[in-house]
Amino acid sequence: MEIKAQGAVVALGTFDGVHAGHRALISEAAGLAKALHASPLIYTFRNHPLSLFGREPRLLMTPEERIAALAATGIPVAADAFDAQLASTPPRDFVCMLVERFALRGVVAGFNYTFGDRGAGDTALLKTLGEELGIAVRVLGPVSYENEPVSSTRIRACLEQGELETANAMLGTCYALSGAVTANRRIGHALGFPTANLEGYGNKVLPLSGVYAARAFVAGEAFNAVTNVGNNPTVEGRSTTVETHLLDFERDIYGMPLRVEFVARLRGEVKFPSREALAAQIAADAAHARAILK
Figure 1 (cartoon, rainbow, N blue to C red):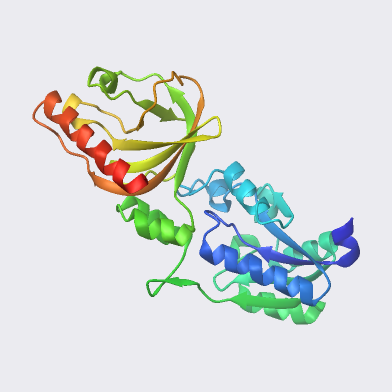
Figure 2: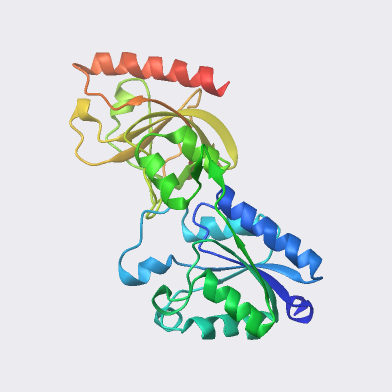
């Protein structure tokens, strides 16, 4: 009701990853709202729009993680389900819906933002509609990192190519996977390095196969860790797993929630000649991770 009374300036976007570009857009919306004596608001969709058409990419955040990260900015979030009705809404009707629902005073969008049926609306149309409806419209150009635009697509590619440092810099935080600890073959335990097998992280991007220095969060407590993403070729693994060895940790956490933040890439996945050679390398990886995470 407070937003309706004051009118809103709305930041528009999908916001997967809530990366540096998204944060700049949200900050711009907050600044415009202050100038117009209006309320800032983030408007997004609960599901990725491409999911409706069976073309959803691997994501940087689950819907729940994304909404929580947006809410953590301190600005209210309105998140609608992107369904067939919304997908077929003409661009002008979509903007009019925002006007009616939020007493729209202004909008802020990225340079490549599209909206309405088949993405027919672009920022040029948004500006035209703004003039017609008396709405302030600001369009932000790309935020750059290392002379290239920051985007969710670029961050996904960096993760899949092993460029973790670049991905984390654009995210402004460490990329993370969250899920539950499930049963595994206990091979790490037999080698002297018990691991927690992570599952249930949804349709998220997996970093390139390899070994990473990580921080693992159990019941809100952080632990230094080494995480392997891959199929464990030395022991003839067949499917990709995410397994984490928590350093200086002996508790049984089977079935518990676990969050793994990827801090640094240590090496690629290697098939060793023996389990003994693998165990020796894991010990070296643990020492390397300790040096990074200290």
